[in-house]
Image (cartoon, rainbow, N blue to C red; front, side, top):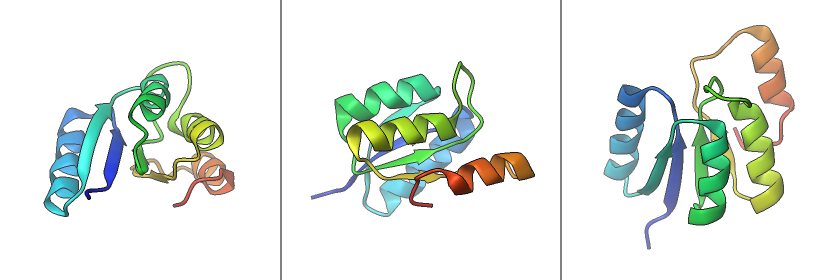
Length: 100
């Protein structure tokens, strides 16, 4: 049985790279979400085993808020995959309930 992953990434090239890498390692990528709200909705619908989450996303909420909601509502582990490294964002990410 393949483990299912939901990728949340707004950059198409990065999303494709993550998808190809995950698939080459034997994971099933169920969807690619480009907005935090979409990730929340898809996590409920698809029930992936893991969500890979970008932090900086377009829309009303960012990846940190989406991760908190996904974990709270569905108990699905979330790991951040981001190039965002400013101090404030890093402190918010560290204090969230994600798995990495």
